[in-house]
Length: 321
Image 1: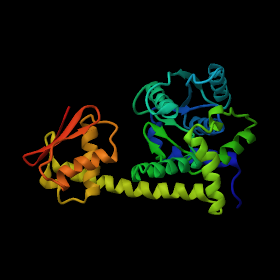
Image 2 (image 1 turned 180 degrees about the vertical axis):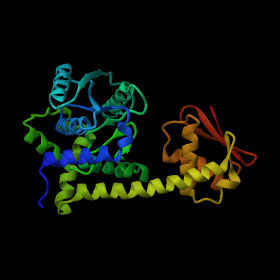
Image 3 (image 1 turned 90 degrees about the vertical axis):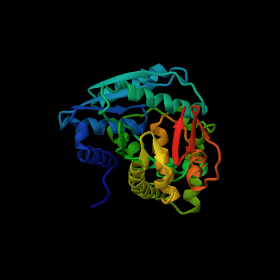
Image 4 (image 1 turned 30 degrees about the horizontal axis):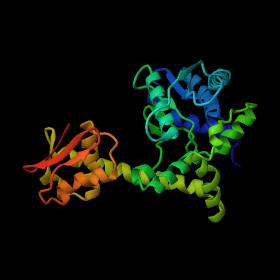
């Protein structure tokens, strides 16, 4: 048999994703993030088709970032299109984009916060239209920034409350699905603005890599992400057990941590620090805290974001605001 047509491929990917995650449908509600682009529209149609067979209600969530003139009309059109494609309801969430890290990061943060806050309960799921091409871009960003295996492993298909059924499909599949449905997606002007890093990766870097390496780069990067994700998850299990053994109330027992490989120690320390309220941890932060175990010379404490300090005293690690 030949390859399925784009619409069938999208529908099958969503159907298989929901079948594998049947417990997430127990609430009878499913949410889909909709921008009006090809990825989210194809996803909405397939999600509504699959969910309705299970008597699950689908709500489309459209985020209006208010970054360009006419954004309210664009959001309203996307909501209307989602209803026509089968969504039982569609809501527009208006956000204010501000904060550090540039417009891209600030908009992403505002979008995810709005989607999360729109959920009526923490066990609900929001489907996102990320494709294999988005995964490839994420992996390249992680490589370029030296962010480590956790970043290079890319996006997870299921990372509650987020679900990404289309990660194995190329962007061309969603575009083809919309063409089959007779739907004209909205094209975000920001997606052609070369001031944004992802746009340059999409329009310049990936096409060059495809040309130099004779094709298949996006698929190869996605496979790399999947392999690294499996390795990372295995290490996280081992690190969780190390952390469990090292815990002594709110502190950690250095004697338990010291014999462990540094990679496991840093994973355990990351979980411990996040649990204590420390945020925006970098590799440099983790290595500095790990040095209190693996390179102990009586040094002082380590300053951490949020005005926290990690220090070693009498064979224990502690972290305090």
